[in-house]
Length: 406
Image 1 (cartoon, rainbow, N blue to C red):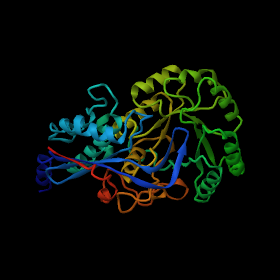
Image 2 (tube, rainbow, N blue to C red; image 1 turned 135 degrees about the horizontal axis):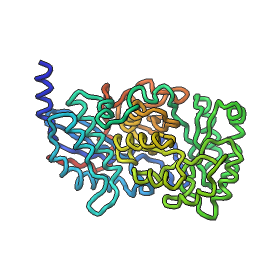
Image 3 (tube, one colour; image 1 turned 90 degrees about the vertical axis):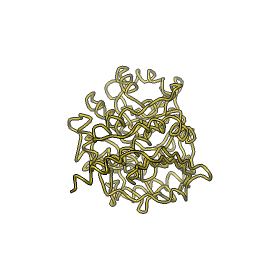
Image 4 (cartoon, one colour; image 1 turned 90 degrees about the horizontal axis):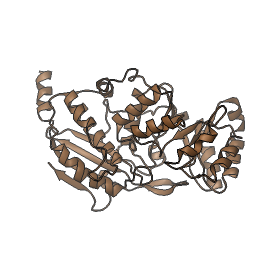
């Protein structure tokens, strides 16, 4: 009987409607770094509804300085590029569905990147498809042929980081104190400000004992702020401090400026804006400047491309960071947790801030990391126990919801 019911579900695994929700959610505190300042989150949520009533949800957080996309361009790409493609989605098996999802476009007809839009559509399709076929994320990694990937991944070892992102020294002190007494022991300090030396001194002074004993870990993120004239001085003074790595010290395309700072004792480099797809990964490794990759699901085009990048990084001896975009709701946190469940050896993890950062969320129980950056108490992922999505209408930008019947 169960097989008959599943067959009926599969027969109706045809898309009936695609709806996009551009959201605007106030942040609890302003997030500031060298490339941007934000007081609101601006994710785009896409809902894909099957004829059998199954709903799948995905989320995009676009950044012009990362993939060239905006919230408006994401909605446009979903409407003009992906929705016509979804007319052909009517799989009769789980592998057939995955092959279709894996083939979603990364560029539009003009060759522009639509990675963030693709990530949202991919996540929504995976969500709905796994419900229809009663499958989980591990079934996805098995189909992808990724030896070593699967449960428990990095569940037992990953700890979420606290990100110190403010231009104010007073707020920096308060952020650090709050995070430390909240048990966080892994920090990322945003640099690229005029008073970087003073900011670093204050952070290192507050964490001096735990840093010396190895109980605390610190890295910095420059968000592409140093060019040829500044990089030498920046790497020299950063090298005096007990930090683990420097993230994105130079702009995308200028990675050759890092070559003089390679070798024994050099600060490891984490690539973020420089790493979007597999071509970027191969280029950075070929150049000889790849120590760690910051893999962000919304930036890299979805869960499946992100897992492929992680597998490639492991084969090449490159470290892995699971990153996030400022303002992600619990939907992208679910995708991040699914990544961590499948991917081993993740060195740093970011995300799962939920209502710690957002004034509101779109699920009743916001996903937040636990004490010390541990796995969320209310842990869910794409395998099951999905949270009910609500509040989309509440946070949707006025008049910008788009419904596309198929």
